Image (cartoon, rainbow, N blue to C red; front, side, top):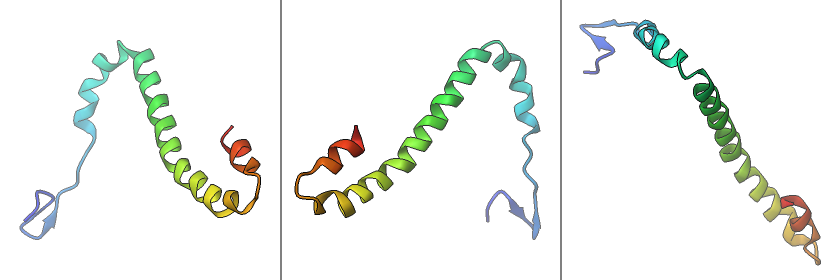
Length: 74
């Protein structure tokens, strides 16, 4: 049986314990902001790269000169 379900009732999970970290995190506000921006950029990149490769394979190899591939990844 999982921790979330005990005896047929569901326990709600709360984020309130993370609030105790706020004083420590606020000391490094710039680093936390930078880390969140980097995390968002990494997520967008990892989601967009397969789409770019799919489009390149679908359309890039049909053109005889390959200029589509060069311009697409430039």
